[in-house]
Image (cartoon, rainbow over all chains, first blue to last red; front, side, top):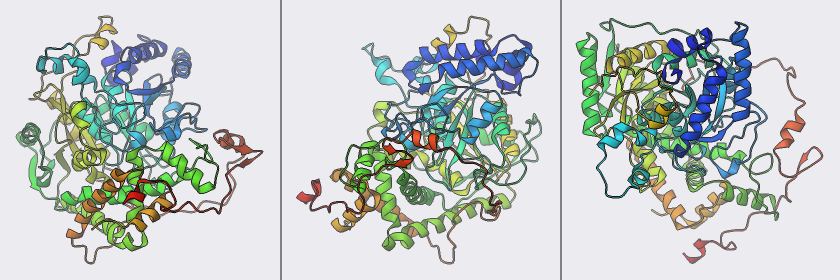
Length: 526
Length: 109
């Protein structure tokens, strides 16, 4: 029963009052992970350590001394965060079997507050991709593929294996984390977000996906992709929970020199009732080519929702939007080329048997360890960084980056508080359709609405909004000012309350529910 | 405008990653073509942006005190080949074979 409720309102209270114990909660989640194995959301399930953590949490509750609201709460972590004693693979052959000697700062913070680490979730190899389909452990399946809502809308096929071939992707690259939260196997999960990798799968899986401001949460221990854009991402089932996670993770880390030194004060979200002082910006360039008419309509309806509630809703312009994906492509591949240089087989990770020379060993190790996507980005990045190309591509992209960041600054300076945009162009595609285009093309298409926020370092959040005609989740994105997460989340929470996004109806979850649970009232938005 | 074979070879040496096949080269071509769109943007007088935190944060130096270490065992744990407290590498200063000498698809073109 406790599985379906938010942290703040229900589960934490239940734990405190002893209505459910941390070990019960942990066991239920572990059992659900087993029965939803077909989703392929988890790469590693840390059953033993999780149960041990749950037992320790239970002791604390018995003594009346829980560490905080996260004590005993099962969480999952994307497999590109270092976790001491637990394999960290980045879904790559390069790191298969790699057991890190340390915890990423965000992981340590969660453990210090008593959270129970259930396991590491699946992703695109080295977080490069927008489908969670390109990792060595195979693709992640969107739990909504198996929901009554999707099945009801599916065109009936003559063969019974249509469920097998009909499943849709989670989006990516934090697809495993999104699927884990969406299928109730954990209460919250960590993802990462470099171009939209937390918000994209959040939208496709019907969960809240928060990308915090760059510099707010430590990246120490997050295996880097693009140092100037990466952030740890937070995936939860409701906005309040995202605020709780944010509160426990944000703040300066001496081990990450890109975290700001300002004091961070965790906050509780007010229940906004009056939006009349709010100014919502609708960037016209986000009506991008390929945006489905369904999502366009939903976006428009959302704008009306704010307008009718008294907020000021204005159309704004972010003129360089269409170049941000190109800019990202250059900067990302350049930083990737640099970051991937550390994988040479000497100190950790895969090592080739090649012994002729250091260079030949490095080359063979990297050929064996990286997939095509990673290698392609490394090669492109090195091309853009060649002496003859450096000014033309890399520095040029850095200049365009400033223009993109300035676009946002100008809009916020003109009085807009929050921007409202779609998160994705479409609802989740069937896997068989998705893989018909290559990774780079897909990423270029799917990141278009999310990655400008990474370019400018701004906080952004996906809020599940409604179900599409195919019965799949569609989310909308709010983008806020730097370090104004409280305002961003307050507005997101208000919106979440208005739209009443329906709960996923999954047979596996119902089976584990022992009938005590009451169905939440869900008036859908569309 | 196709990328010259010399440049491809140079890239393979720099990246220590190979293109593997003509598809890999095609991928690079497409990536370059895609990136060329950047030149449509007028960036006269615009400074390159290294970090979004350029206004906000100043890198600080901490006291030069040793605060952690003694983790040799942990660090060596993940290395496949080691001797005592050394990582072991094959002989260095042997350059990677040039493309013409290597057995790659590019020999055909």
